[in-house]
Amino acid sequence: MTVASLRVVRSIVSLKKQVVESLRTAIFDRRFAPGDRLVERELCEMLDVSRTLLREALSQLEAEGVVQIIPHRGPIVAVYTAEDAKSIYEVRAALEEMAGRSFVERASEQECKALEIAFAEMKRSCTSKLGADHLTVKARFYAALTAGAHNPVLVEMLRLIHGRVSMLRATTLAQPGRLAASLAELGHIVKTIKARDAEAAALACRRHVENAGAIAIAVLAEDTAAPETKPPSAKRRRLI
Image: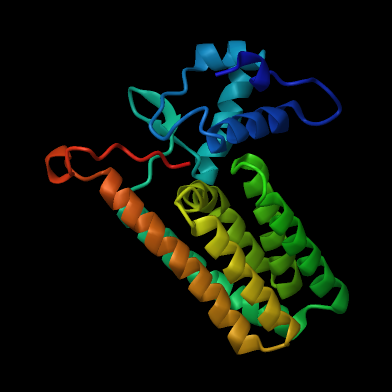
């Protein structure tokens, strides 16, 4: 790990926000892997911040589902099981199905254009290495989709599971062929929206989430299987 890459720069931007973003990026980039301990003393030195500020940042990341606080052990990078993934994707599928339908019914022409621009940006990002930048670009696509749905409760519910979804999204996109398939599915969502077909857009959104969910569940089930049930040559698969 490059220590300098985590150091924050003090500015008018909230220092706590910088710490949260720096840690979140390090986790999504797999500089900290699922299950890794987050030692406060070491992180304070890396980030050049106080322990109080670090604990506030870790508390926010815990609320997002990116970090878990284990009694008598301290904070670790969140670890998700196949059952966790199943629950998260069930909720996400229902919410994004609603988002797709509502977008067609309520979005303005300007919001439709914003979604198309976000998708074009995603296509460009697919030529680069998968990492936090790509996940950020994909998050912009979903932000445009939910903004056009004009349902603040829906936006808030998706925000609450955003960290968990981002951790699992890294799991699925890292699998061979999934990045291209994901892009094709999102392209189909954009196509149905441009056609102003609310039910087709809702179905496209649900299928996209269900496809991602099936991969995440399979990967996590294999990753947590007992060693004796795996082929001798199998290696533990990383989540990004």
